[in-house]
Length: 423
Ligand code: EPU
View (cartoon, rainbow, N blue to C red):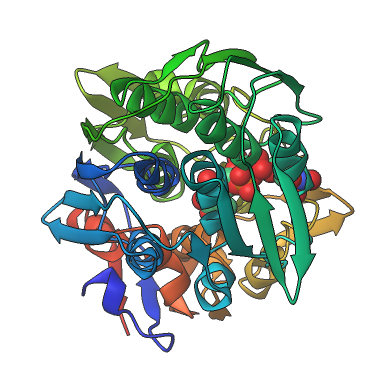
């Protein structure tokens, strides 16, 4: 089934599975490609982006660009983005409301066209998600904003580089600032920048376009503004969260798998943690070999900005800890409200107590299959993983959330021998 066509009613049926065997290939990183598509707005011409996953979020970002007058086409995993000389710098409510990541068009639109009108993103399943840092950072370069009728209108006659200290290493704020700074006059220094591999991928893309960015992947980035950029070809980095999903699958189901395309250097902290839990992970050429022949041991996990354990890995850890030996304490430090799926795991017999931004997870010998609901992309994937270690049938409703971030989770797990199908 194509992810773009998954209806909101689609459900995934999971039966007890394992041990898993075989090879699975990781696609391009969702959280990179969405930003590369936004960065294309910075120059006219034809961009070719390779290793692009066929997921709903990419289709939606494509729709947003098309709404502005850009033409976007996919053939296999290659996306062609043709950006005209002039376009409508507007992101309407219907599209932003569907996908918060749309906010990253703000920086490039202001930098190239001097104006932008973007719907204010609302909250979501993670709770309140402000964009104050995005706006403050762009204001420091000289942009001005007004908000009315649910829209932010930005103006920037002349962006001028300066030192910007981010209050928190926000991924989105760093990206918006970076995409504005590349065309600003003079030098911008981004202090306390996010260091995620997807930021480095964006900086590589922008540098290939003619930008002058140094320090990507470090806390202090320097951007020397240029007057013009040009279209490029680029291959997206692999999705470390998708790779982590297959690690979690073999973690709960046991077995021996190869995760082709995964980059160990993007997942160091995660690999250390799963090693402590008893997984044997060996980096091989262009991938990871993973072996699990015992019940996992519980560990404590705290989410932190990169290179810490990513918040997106957390539901996967909670699923693994639900069937591990012992008690693990999971602390969420990025998104206050990101424990809502715990109730779904409890419906499957997990012993999870949530207090504020901590969850205490006591491992059970097995879970018990139940009808549950996927609240968001990663939590939905974690429920599928939990289902592998649950007696009976687990039916995950609202599986369209999963299709936002995974091209073919069902097909890939099935190829490893798991009993997973669409229902
Ligand atoms: N924050 C603010 N003000 C801002 C911006 C962020 O208070 O102006 C806060 C957020 O509320 C949050 C923290 O700062 O508490 C970190 O948010 P960040 O800006 O780093 O996150 P993001 O850019 O909105 C991206 C990913 C998320 C991932 C986070 C953290 C994309 C499209 N999204 O979100 O991925 O969880 O970074 O690594 O890149 C997903 O893939 O499903 C996903 C949600």
